[in-house]
Length: 316
Ligand code: COA
Image (tube, rainbow, N blue to C red; front, side, top):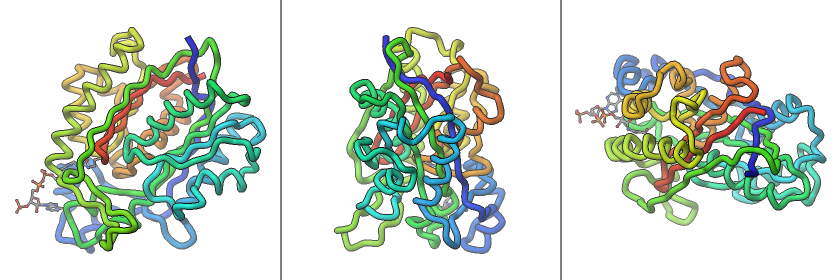
């Protein structure tokens, strides 16, 4: 068996907190509607000088510092995102320069929407197996406030900005992530126009259909990861699920018959931060001591594409 372990984490949230009461001033909505339908009370939005690159850099620097590694030891640097500051250079390339990573580091951004970070974990596991340097940096970062239509109440109350980072080490005797991934091409359910469409690149979403997709795919994905790893869900220490909607999470907890205490999230404070959601929560769990050395977190993301991905990640 070979695979990767989680060495350290980092995170960065914008300074500006926007509560549901602030959203009430923007659109016809209420704190009561948002919190009961989604579990969200507040989210963070970038302001001033804050941007995608600054969030990624802050999260990456924190993770690197906590790992005790030097930048020269990193062999792979991946940024999962769909809201990078520039399409090229990719944020991963900007990080190569700013962090002082060696020029032969494999650096690229990847887009698998809200499943992006878990796609990134699996990609890093594969790349690190072949790399000379066995440490990888995987970041999930979004500045969704830049692609949010603040006149559309059905979407603008859901999203937030942030970044989470993870340093990983590949080892011949480390456990495999036992990653499970999937995609189902669909423009109707969740779509963000690209540069050549002539429309503003706002998020378009059929909320009900996304909900149906999520409650179907999330429990299936979690079960498949556990089956691949040959363990029962009872043997998982923490569930780190994409924080899209508390009702989706509650449904998955019920369907999987897992202890809600092992599935505590942070959606109330962050909103849905897409690719940043899983690593932000992972960082909270590691820094608070809720996920300890040797313990395993079952991470799972789902969203636009449509995409989904799950993996079992052990803290070194
Ligand atoms: N405030 C108040 N009312 C709102 C509102 C808001 N922010 N947004 C929508 N509404 C209204 C609708 O206009 C509708 O009114 P109507 O009945 O008069 O037409 C009513 O609330 C119900 O809307 P509906 O879309 O049926 O609500 P819902 O119960 O499906 O909840 C979501 C909407 C978006 C919260 C829910 O569908 C959801 O969470 N979907 C998943 C979204 C998601 O997770 N996306 C990211 C995936 S990665």
